[in-house]
Length: 410
Image (tube, rainbow, N blue to C red; front, side, top):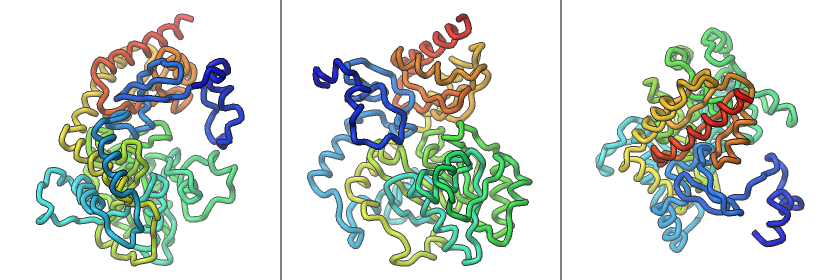
Protein backbone atom coordinates (compact mmCIF):
# COMPACT_ATOMS: atom_id res chain seq x y z
CA UNK A 1 0.00 0.00 0.00
CA UNK A 2 1.24 3.51 -0.73
CA UNK A 3 2.34 5.80 2.09
CA UNK A 4 -0.75 7.92 1.39
CA UNK A 5 -2.96 4.86 1.72
CA UNK A 6 -1.17 3.83 4.90
CA UNK A 7 -2.30 7.09 6.48
CA UNK A 8 -5.87 6.71 5.20
CA UNK A 9 -6.30 3.00 5.87
CA UNK A 10 -8.16 0.58 3.64
CA UNK A 11 -11.52 2.36 3.98
CA UNK A 12 -9.97 5.65 2.95
CA UNK A 13 -8.10 4.15 0.03
CA UNK A 14 -11.26 2.53 -1.30
CA UNK A 15 -13.58 5.45 -0.63
CA UNK A 16 -13.73 6.53 -4.28
CA UNK A 17 -13.12 3.08 -5.75
CA UNK A 18 -15.37 2.45 -8.79
CA UNK A 19 -16.46 -1.01 -7.56
CA UNK A 20 -20.18 -1.44 -6.95
CA UNK A 21 -21.08 -1.67 -3.24
CA UNK A 22 -22.58 -5.17 -3.43
CA UNK A 23 -20.64 -6.22 -0.33
CA UNK A 24 -20.18 -4.44 2.99
CA UNK A 25 -17.35 -1.93 2.96
CA UNK A 26 -14.10 -3.84 3.60
CA UNK A 27 -11.81 -2.97 6.49
CA UNK A 28 -8.98 -5.29 5.46
CA UNK A 29 -7.09 -5.64 2.20
CA UNK A 30 -5.33 -8.96 1.69
CA UNK A 31 -2.28 -9.14 -0.51
CA UNK A 32 -0.78 -12.58 0.07
CA UNK A 33 -1.72 -16.05 1.23
CA UNK A 34 -0.11 -19.38 1.98
CA UNK A 35 -2.09 -22.44 3.01
CA UNK A 36 -4.46 -21.33 5.80
CA UNK A 37 -2.67 -18.03 6.37
CA UNK A 38 -3.35 -14.60 4.88
CA UNK A 39 -1.39 -11.35 5.15
CA UNK A 40 -3.00 -7.94 4.88
CA UNK A 41 -1.62 -4.72 3.43
CA UNK A 42 -0.16 -3.81 6.82
CA UNK A 43 1.72 -7.10 7.11
CA UNK A 44 -0.61 -8.60 9.74
CA UNK A 45 -1.09 -12.37 9.56
CA UNK A 46 -4.44 -14.14 9.89
CA UNK A 47 -5.69 -17.70 10.14
CA UNK A 48 -8.35 -18.05 7.44
CA UNK A 49 -11.18 -20.30 8.64
CA UNK A 50 -13.47 -18.92 5.92
CA UNK A 51 -11.39 -20.26 3.05
CA UNK A 52 -13.13 -18.20 0.39
CA UNK A 53 -16.42 -19.75 1.57
CA UNK A 54 -15.31 -23.34 0.96
CA UNK A 55 -13.30 -22.47 -2.14
CA UNK A 56 -9.71 -22.75 -0.93
CA UNK A 57 -9.78 -26.43 -0.04
CA UNK A 58 -6.14 -26.91 -1.11
CA UNK A 59 -5.05 -23.70 0.61
CA UNK A 60 -4.03 -20.28 -0.64
CA UNK A 61 -1.25 -20.09 -3.21
CA UNK A 62 -0.97 -23.85 -3.46
CA UNK A 63 2.35 -24.33 -5.26
CA UNK A 64 1.14 -27.22 -7.43
CA UNK A 65 -1.86 -25.22 -8.59
CA UNK A 66 0.28 -22.13 -9.19
CA UNK A 67 2.63 -24.19 -11.34
CA UNK A 68 -0.25 -25.54 -13.43
CA UNK A 69 -1.70 -22.05 -13.94
CA UNK A 70 1.63 -20.67 -15.08
CA UNK A 71 2.40 -23.58 -17.39
CA UNK A 72 -1.06 -23.68 -18.98
CA UNK A 73 -1.25 -19.89 -19.32
CA UNK A 74 1.90 -20.07 -21.39
CA UNK A 75 0.32 -22.67 -23.69
CA UNK A 76 -3.38 -21.94 -24.18
CA UNK A 77 -6.05 -20.24 -22.07
CA UNK A 78 -9.20 -20.25 -24.20
CA UNK A 79 -10.58 -21.28 -27.56
CA UNK A 80 -14.19 -21.64 -28.61
CA UNK A 81 -16.01 -24.75 -27.52
CA UNK A 82 -16.44 -25.49 -31.20
CA UNK A 83 -13.20 -27.41 -30.68
CA UNK A 84 -11.89 -29.77 -27.99
CA UNK A 85 -9.00 -29.03 -25.63
CA UNK A 86 -6.82 -31.46 -23.74
CA UNK A 87 -8.01 -31.36 -20.11
CA UNK A 88 -11.81 -31.17 -20.16
CA UNK A 89 -12.32 -34.84 -21.04
CA UNK A 90 -10.12 -35.99 -18.15
CA UNK A 91 -11.87 -33.72 -15.65
CA UNK A 92 -15.31 -34.90 -16.80
CA UNK A 93 -14.30 -38.53 -16.26
CA UNK A 94 -12.90 -37.78 -12.80
CA UNK A 95 -16.09 -35.95 -11.83
CA UNK A 96 -18.18 -38.88 -13.03
CA UNK A 97 -16.02 -41.26 -11.01
CA UNK A 98 -16.32 -39.08 -7.90
CA UNK A 99 -20.10 -38.70 -8.21
CA UNK A 100 -20.71 -42.42 -8.78
CA UNK A 101 -18.30 -43.69 -6.11
CA UNK A 102 -15.74 -45.01 -8.57
CA UNK A 103 -13.01 -42.49 -7.81
CA UNK A 104 -10.28 -45.12 -7.56
CA UNK A 105 -11.09 -46.72 -10.91
CA UNK A 106 -7.72 -46.37 -12.69
CA UNK A 107 -8.45 -47.10 -16.34
CA UNK A 108 -9.67 -44.41 -18.73
CA UNK A 109 -9.85 -46.76 -21.68
CA UNK A 110 -12.24 -49.21 -20.03
CA UNK A 111 -14.15 -46.82 -17.78
CA UNK A 112 -17.76 -46.36 -18.84
CA UNK A 113 -19.21 -43.14 -17.38
CA UNK A 114 -22.85 -43.12 -16.31
CA UNK A 115 -23.18 -39.36 -16.59
CA UNK A 116 -22.07 -36.42 -18.67
CA UNK A 117 -20.62 -33.08 -17.57
CA UNK A 118 -21.16 -29.48 -18.65
CA UNK A 119 -18.52 -26.94 -17.64
CA UNK A 120 -19.36 -23.39 -16.61
CA UNK A 121 -17.77 -20.71 -14.45
CA UNK A 122 -19.67 -20.55 -11.15
CA UNK A 123 -22.15 -22.21 -8.86
CA UNK A 124 -24.99 -19.96 -9.97
CA UNK A 125 -24.39 -20.99 -13.59
CA UNK A 126 -24.31 -24.64 -12.56
CA UNK A 127 -27.70 -24.25 -10.91
CA UNK A 128 -29.07 -22.38 -13.93
CA UNK A 129 -28.33 -25.39 -16.13
CA UNK A 130 -29.88 -27.74 -13.57
CA UNK A 131 -33.13 -25.79 -13.87
CA UNK A 132 -32.99 -26.02 -17.66
CA UNK A 133 -32.34 -29.77 -17.41
CA UNK A 134 -35.39 -30.15 -15.17
CA UNK A 135 -37.55 -28.53 -17.84
CA UNK A 136 -35.96 -30.02 -20.95
CA UNK A 137 -35.60 -33.60 -19.71
CA UNK A 138 -39.13 -34.00 -18.33
CA UNK A 139 -41.99 -32.50 -20.36
CA UNK A 140 -43.13 -29.09 -21.56
CA UNK A 141 -45.94 -29.05 -19.02
CA UNK A 142 -43.51 -29.55 -16.13
CA UNK A 143 -41.48 -26.54 -15.11
CA UNK A 144 -41.80 -26.02 -11.32
CA UNK A 145 -38.81 -26.82 -9.13
CA UNK A 146 -39.21 -27.43 -5.39
CA UNK A 147 -36.45 -26.08 -3.13
CA UNK A 148 -36.06 -25.58 0.62
CA UNK A 149 -36.65 -22.51 2.74
CA UNK A 150 -33.34 -20.89 3.73
CA UNK A 151 -31.66 -22.51 0.71
CA UNK A 152 -29.18 -20.61 -1.46
CA UNK A 153 -28.44 -21.36 -5.10
CA UNK A 154 -26.87 -18.20 -6.52
CA UNK A 155 -27.65 -14.61 -7.51
CA UNK A 156 -28.68 -14.69 -11.16
CA UNK A 157 -32.43 -14.10 -11.42
CA UNK A 158 -33.41 -17.75 -11.79
CA UNK A 159 -30.93 -18.95 -9.16
CA UNK A 160 -32.10 -16.21 -6.82
CA UNK A 161 -35.72 -17.20 -7.40
CA UNK A 162 -34.76 -20.73 -6.39
CA UNK A 163 -33.35 -19.49 -3.08
CA UNK A 164 -35.73 -19.96 -0.18
CA UNK A 165 -34.85 -16.52 1.21
CA UNK A 166 -37.66 -14.03 0.40
CA UNK A 167 -35.75 -11.01 1.69
CA UNK A 168 -33.27 -11.53 -1.15
CA UNK A 169 -36.12 -11.51 -3.68
CA UNK A 170 -37.74 -8.22 -2.66
CA UNK A 171 -35.30 -5.78 -4.30
CA UNK A 172 -35.61 -7.56 -7.66
CA UNK A 173 -39.29 -8.49 -7.79
CA UNK A 174 -41.06 -9.85 -9.68
CA UNK A 175 -39.07 -13.07 -9.60
CA UNK A 176 -39.08 -15.57 -12.47
CA UNK A 177 -41.85 -18.12 -12.07
CA UNK A 178 -41.39 -21.84 -11.56
CA UNK A 179 -39.97 -22.16 -8.03
CA UNK A 180 -41.74 -23.24 -4.84
CA UNK A 181 -40.03 -23.17 -1.44
CA UNK A 182 -40.85 -25.87 1.08
CA UNK A 183 -40.14 -25.74 4.82
CA UNK A 184 -36.77 -27.37 5.41
CA UNK A 185 -37.15 -31.00 6.43
CA UNK A 186 -40.95 -31.18 6.03
CA UNK A 187 -41.60 -34.22 3.86
CA UNK A 188 -45.39 -33.87 4.06
CA UNK A 189 -45.20 -30.30 2.78
CA UNK A 190 -42.89 -31.45 -0.01
CA UNK A 191 -45.33 -34.17 -1.02
CA UNK A 192 -48.30 -31.78 -0.88
CA UNK A 193 -46.48 -29.30 -3.13
CA UNK A 194 -46.13 -31.76 -6.01
CA UNK A 195 -48.61 -31.12 -8.80
CA UNK A 196 -48.86 -31.57 -12.57
CA UNK A 197 -46.35 -28.74 -13.17
CA UNK A 198 -43.61 -30.10 -10.89
CA UNK A 199 -40.42 -31.11 -12.70
CA UNK A 200 -37.83 -31.60 -9.95
CA UNK A 201 -36.80 -31.39 -6.33
CA UNK A 202 -33.55 -29.44 -5.92
CA UNK A 203 -31.85 -29.57 -2.50
CA UNK A 204 -28.62 -28.73 -0.74
CA UNK A 205 -27.90 -31.82 1.40
CA UNK A 206 -26.32 -29.31 3.79
CA UNK A 207 -27.66 -25.76 3.52
CA UNK A 208 -24.61 -23.50 3.38
CA UNK A 209 -25.64 -19.84 3.25
CA UNK A 210 -28.83 -20.75 5.11
CA UNK A 211 -26.82 -21.50 8.26
CA UNK A 212 -25.02 -24.83 7.69
CA UNK A 213 -28.11 -26.93 8.35
CA UNK A 214 -27.81 -30.58 7.30
CA UNK A 215 -30.98 -32.24 6.11
CA UNK A 216 -31.67 -35.47 7.95
CA UNK A 217 -30.96 -38.78 6.30
CA UNK A 218 -34.60 -39.77 6.69
CA UNK A 219 -35.83 -36.61 4.96
CA UNK A 220 -33.43 -36.85 2.03
CA UNK A 221 -34.18 -40.52 1.52
CA UNK A 222 -37.92 -39.86 1.51
CA UNK A 223 -37.49 -36.83 -0.75
CA UNK A 224 -35.65 -38.93 -3.31
CA UNK A 225 -38.26 -41.69 -3.09
CA UNK A 226 -40.98 -39.10 -3.62
CA UNK A 227 -39.36 -37.93 -6.86
CA UNK A 228 -39.16 -41.50 -8.14
CA UNK A 229 -42.84 -42.12 -7.32
CA UNK A 230 -43.92 -39.01 -9.22
CA UNK A 231 -41.47 -39.25 -12.12
CA UNK A 232 -39.58 -36.12 -11.09
CA UNK A 233 -35.87 -35.36 -11.12
CA UNK A 234 -33.89 -35.42 -7.89
CA UNK A 235 -31.17 -32.78 -8.07
CA UNK A 236 -28.56 -31.71 -5.50
CA UNK A 237 -26.63 -28.48 -5.10
CA UNK A 238 -23.12 -29.44 -3.99
CA UNK A 239 -21.53 -26.09 -4.87
CA UNK A 240 -20.36 -25.49 -1.30
CA UNK A 241 -20.49 -28.99 0.20
CA UNK A 242 -18.88 -30.93 -2.64
CA UNK A 243 -15.35 -32.16 -3.33
CA UNK A 244 -14.24 -33.62 0.03
CA UNK A 245 -15.49 -30.64 2.06
CA UNK A 246 -17.71 -32.80 4.31
CA UNK A 247 -15.55 -35.93 4.50
CA UNK A 248 -17.05 -37.54 1.38
CA UNK A 249 -16.50 -36.55 -2.23
CA UNK A 250 -20.03 -35.15 -2.16
CA UNK A 251 -22.28 -34.64 0.85
CA UNK A 252 -25.14 -36.63 -0.71
CA UNK A 253 -22.90 -39.69 -0.31
CA UNK A 254 -23.33 -39.52 3.47
CA UNK A 255 -26.95 -40.48 2.85
CA UNK A 256 -26.66 -43.09 0.09
CA UNK A 257 -28.56 -40.98 -2.44
CA UNK A 258 -28.64 -41.39 -6.22
CA UNK A 259 -29.20 -37.91 -7.69
CA UNK A 260 -30.02 -37.23 -11.32
CA UNK A 261 -28.15 -33.92 -11.40
CA UNK A 262 -25.23 -32.64 -9.29
CA UNK A 263 -24.14 -28.98 -9.28
CA UNK A 264 -20.44 -28.34 -8.56
CA UNK A 265 -18.18 -25.28 -8.29
CA UNK A 266 -16.15 -23.50 -5.54
CA UNK A 267 -13.40 -26.02 -4.63
CA UNK A 268 -13.16 -27.37 -8.18
CA UNK A 269 -10.79 -24.54 -9.11
CA UNK A 270 -9.34 -23.77 -5.65
CA UNK A 271 -9.87 -20.08 -6.42
CA UNK A 272 -9.85 -20.23 -10.20
CA UNK A 273 -13.43 -19.74 -11.47
CA UNK A 274 -14.86 -22.99 -12.79
CA UNK A 275 -18.11 -24.85 -12.22
CA UNK A 276 -19.64 -28.04 -13.54
CA UNK A 277 -22.91 -29.92 -13.76
CA UNK A 278 -23.01 -33.71 -13.74
CA UNK A 279 -26.17 -35.21 -15.22
CA UNK A 280 -27.20 -38.78 -15.85
CA UNK A 281 -26.49 -39.74 -19.44
CA UNK A 282 -30.11 -40.45 -20.41
CA UNK A 283 -31.14 -36.98 -19.21
CA UNK A 284 -28.21 -35.27 -20.88
CA UNK A 285 -29.40 -36.83 -24.14
CA UNK A 286 -32.41 -34.48 -24.09
CA UNK A 287 -30.02 -31.63 -24.96
CA UNK A 288 -28.70 -30.98 -28.44
CA UNK A 289 -26.29 -28.51 -29.99
CA UNK A 290 -27.41 -24.95 -29.28
CA UNK A 291 -29.54 -25.70 -26.22
CA UNK A 292 -26.91 -24.33 -23.84
CA UNK A 293 -23.42 -22.92 -23.87
CA UNK A 294 -20.72 -20.92 -22.12
CA UNK A 295 -17.96 -18.95 -23.84
CA UNK A 296 -15.46 -19.58 -21.05
CA UNK A 297 -16.90 -22.86 -19.78
CA UNK A 298 -14.41 -25.72 -19.87
CA UNK A 299 -11.55 -23.52 -21.03
CA UNK A 300 -8.12 -25.20 -21.00
CA UNK A 301 -6.79 -23.05 -18.16
CA UNK A 302 -9.74 -23.77 -15.85
CA UNK A 303 -9.84 -27.47 -16.65
CA UNK A 304 -6.07 -27.80 -16.22
CA UNK A 305 -6.49 -26.42 -12.71
CA UNK A 306 -9.50 -28.64 -11.99
CA UNK A 307 -7.59 -31.70 -13.22
CA UNK A 308 -4.78 -30.99 -10.77
CA UNK A 309 -7.22 -30.20 -7.92
CA UNK A 310 -8.96 -33.57 -8.32
CA UNK A 311 -5.62 -35.36 -8.64
CA UNK A 312 -4.36 -33.83 -5.38
CA UNK A 313 -7.59 -34.51 -3.51
CA UNK A 314 -7.53 -38.16 -4.50
CA UNK A 315 -3.79 -38.60 -4.00
CA UNK A 316 -3.69 -37.05 -0.52
CA UNK A 317 -7.03 -38.37 0.80
CA UNK A 318 -8.74 -35.05 1.39
CA UNK A 319 -11.83 -36.77 2.74
CA UNK A 320 -9.77 -37.90 5.72
CA UNK A 321 -8.37 -34.38 6.15
CA UNK A 322 -11.91 -33.00 6.42
CA UNK A 323 -12.89 -35.68 8.92
CA UNK A 324 -9.89 -34.93 11.14
CA UNK A 325 -10.66 -31.20 11.10
CA UNK A 326 -14.24 -31.89 12.19
CA UNK A 327 -13.10 -34.20 14.97
CA UNK A 328 -10.66 -31.65 16.35
CA UNK A 329 -13.10 -28.73 16.23
CA UNK A 330 -15.87 -30.73 17.88
CA UNK A 331 -13.53 -31.98 20.60
CA UNK A 332 -12.17 -28.51 21.28
CA UNK A 333 -15.48 -26.61 21.32
CA UNK A 334 -18.07 -29.13 22.48
CA UNK A 335 -17.60 -28.43 26.19
CA UNK A 336 -17.42 -24.63 25.91
CA UNK A 337 -20.35 -23.31 27.99
CA UNK A 338 -21.22 -20.62 25.44
CA UNK A 339 -21.56 -23.20 22.63
CA UNK A 340 -25.00 -24.76 22.34
CA UNK A 341 -24.19 -27.14 19.48
CA UNK A 342 -21.96 -27.81 16.51
CA UNK A 343 -23.62 -28.87 13.27
CA UNK A 344 -22.44 -29.90 9.83
CA UNK A 345 -19.95 -32.39 8.49
CA UNK A 346 -16.21 -32.39 7.89
CA UNK A 347 -14.80 -28.90 7.46
CA UNK A 348 -18.23 -27.36 6.85
CA UNK A 349 -19.42 -26.58 10.35
CA UNK A 350 -21.49 -24.06 12.26
CA UNK A 351 -20.92 -23.29 15.95
CA UNK A 352 -24.25 -22.31 17.51
CA UNK A 353 -23.77 -19.78 20.31
CA UNK A 354 -25.83 -19.13 23.42
CA UNK A 355 -26.61 -15.56 22.36
CA UNK A 356 -26.95 -13.49 19.19
CA UNK A 357 -23.32 -12.36 19.33
CA UNK A 358 -21.84 -13.95 16.23
CA UNK A 359 -20.99 -10.64 14.53
CA UNK A 360 -19.26 -9.33 17.64
CA UNK A 361 -17.33 -12.57 18.06
CA UNK A 362 -16.26 -12.61 14.39
CA UNK A 363 -15.14 -8.97 14.58
CA UNK A 364 -13.08 -9.61 17.70
CA UNK A 365 -11.64 -12.77 16.16
CA UNK A 366 -10.49 -10.75 13.15
CA UNK A 367 -8.69 -8.34 15.44
CA UNK A 368 -6.95 -11.30 17.04
CA UNK A 369 -5.97 -12.75 13.65
CA UNK A 370 -8.71 -15.31 12.98
CA UNK A 371 -11.26 -15.10 10.16
CA UNK A 372 -14.66 -16.75 10.74
CA UNK A 373 -18.06 -16.06 9.18
CA UNK A 374 -21.11 -15.00 11.26
CA UNK A 375 -23.55 -16.97 9.13
CA UNK A 376 -26.56 -16.26 11.39
CA UNK A 377 -26.95 -13.93 14.38
CA UNK A 378 -26.21 -16.87 16.67
CA UNK A 379 -23.85 -19.04 14.60
CA UNK A 380 -20.31 -18.93 13.25
CA UNK A 381 -19.53 -20.80 10.02
CA UNK A 382 -16.14 -22.52 9.73
CA UNK A 383 -14.94 -23.66 6.29
CA UNK A 384 -11.13 -23.67 6.60
CA UNK A 385 -8.83 -25.05 3.91
CA UNK A 386 -8.61 -28.82 4.16
CA UNK A 387 -4.83 -28.40 4.41
CA UNK A 388 -5.20 -26.70 7.81
CA UNK A 389 -2.89 -28.30 10.35
CA UNK A 390 -3.86 -29.58 13.79
CA UNK A 391 -1.79 -26.80 15.37
CA UNK A 392 -3.63 -24.17 13.33
CA UNK A 393 -7.01 -25.62 14.32
CA UNK A 394 -5.93 -25.60 17.96
CA UNK A 395 -4.77 -21.99 17.74
CA UNK A 396 -7.99 -20.91 16.07
CA UNK A 397 -10.15 -22.62 18.68
CA UNK A 398 -8.10 -21.06 21.48
CA UNK A 399 -8.83 -17.63 20.01
CA UNK A 400 -12.55 -18.38 19.82
CA UNK A 401 -12.72 -19.77 23.33
CA UNK A 402 -10.89 -16.77 24.72
CA UNK A 403 -13.36 -14.39 23.02
CA UNK A 404 -16.41 -16.34 24.17
CA UNK A 405 -15.16 -16.47 27.76
CA UNK A 406 -14.53 -12.73 27.68
CA UNK A 407 -18.03 -12.11 26.26
CA UNK A 408 -19.57 -14.05 29.13
CA UNK A 409 -17.56 -12.33 31.87
CA UNK A 410 -18.08 -8.79 30.51
